Length: 315
Length: 274
Image 1: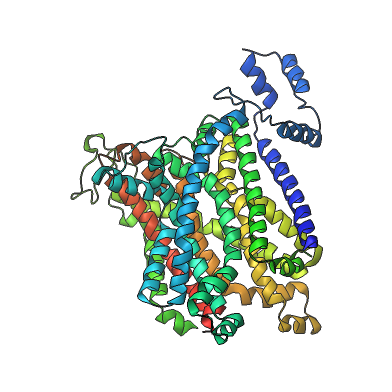
Image 2 (image 1 turned 90 degrees about the vertical axis):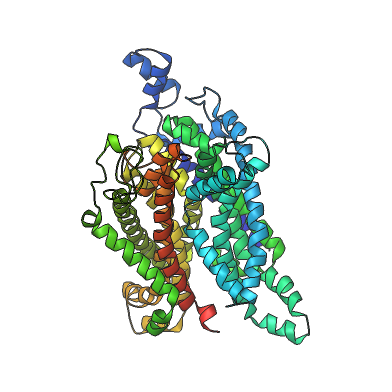
């Protein structure tokens, strides 16, 4: 167990290091000379010597690995540079926009959580029933539907034809119901498919036969034993999707005009505001890695056996 | 197994949809009644009639012809990209599984690093740094997605590699390359077809969502996501301009998903053994 945790921790440190290197490289591929760009921003027509001076001052003449060390030092101190668009520090902007997106993603995750477990289990237990076929059809529709289009359909149906919701609405939970549903439906659909398959394969295992032989009611077998054993793969996926939804929210935020991190990032791309883009990329990637740790921890609590099994995998 | 495939209605429906859209894409110039880019300023927002089977859009262009040509963009991008992803996935996945050991561990860590960057984030970051362009979108998709394919294929190849016949062919003196290309790859091919088919659906959705956000295509390209983006300002007055392209995306990706998911049901060992 402790060996497993130690191994996961070293793995984590290597991954975090790799993520920062990749973020740094992504932020350095722009053909625009940052020293010149900066000089042009503060001076009207900078002389070549002035640009060189700024280059030295910003440490841009150093070899790439030293620039990386300087950059990571600044990031650790919470300094991600300042936005070209809003002139605010990038981390201030992110802190302003992230909560709205977090709220949206949290509600979407709630929808996913309350839908896929019961639906997946019922359609696995009643395999090939009408319910199972119906769910299968709906799930395939759910993974095939473009989310932006679904957003417009929802707006058209629930805000125009039957005005239950407002077209543009801010600041309350009700305004997040439609967007979070749009964000949740594709993920929930793929989870239902996957969870049903996992439950089915678990239903065929020996421990189910043994539990039946012991006279445990089939309800308890399914909702206790089988559920617990079917969760680990989906927990990993669940947290992976949490990270992806933070990024995927750009589409939904664009349809519903919500002011979250996705739309902020999109505006930054249109304005070619590189410091903001790089800051957002780093923050989202790190949230993603943190989510995968959380998934590991939850899996370990749910099912301590995994720690022995997976040891061989990383050996 | 072939009989089971032909009896499966879902596979047939999926295949029919795929063939339908592919035919439209190939013969687009013959099917489309009008030039998809011809602007007719006098005939904006026409409703469906004679010359324009589905009416005209905000610039007076024939909606039907634009939808027909849109099939070319969706399939023309998704299919080659997925072939590239599949080839990379097969090469790296089988190599990691076959060689194993320390290399496999490094491979898994590289996978974890790349997986921390969602495709949309890579696309936004590259477009922000290098500017618009279809090749940038494709590069970003391949950059962020290849590990997903490689990782899944590694799992399948690892299961195959542990089987006795691989040991037997090793004893018989087969080279590593021969074992991978002649034994492992053919045996995991059915699973790979499932990944490819559902992967094409996912890519069609992904690329159309990028173009919906205004990334990748020049203004005015008759691509479904881009058409939706241009029509959104007139959504409340002319919802059909938004409805049609979305329906096309839905039908195309549903075709690939129906086919892939049904194939998965047929070949997946847990369910087949019942």
